[in-house]
Image (cartoon, rainbow, N blue to C red):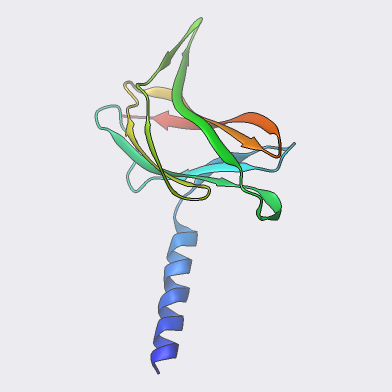
Length: 129
């Protein structure tokens, strides 16, 4: 009975995690994907907090080199102050001190190293309020 209970609990938790919205992009050349999950929508008025994930094929771990926030504004861009990034596990990072300081189209830029190749993936983010 105990085993059945824990099996059901595990299945339910995996199903809930799978149904949460995860935004991200994948590289066609390395097949590395960068995605994030946030518990609340990003706004221009509050600090954002999200988890960043790097996934790679064949269980090889892609290494995070840098992540930042960027907004292209015509002929110039606008960034955010440096993010605070804490590695939780290989390929999983807790990101705080993320400030989308105005409404509009932002990017989470994720630079990684995988099997000798360094590449930057861009995850688009729309800040509506």
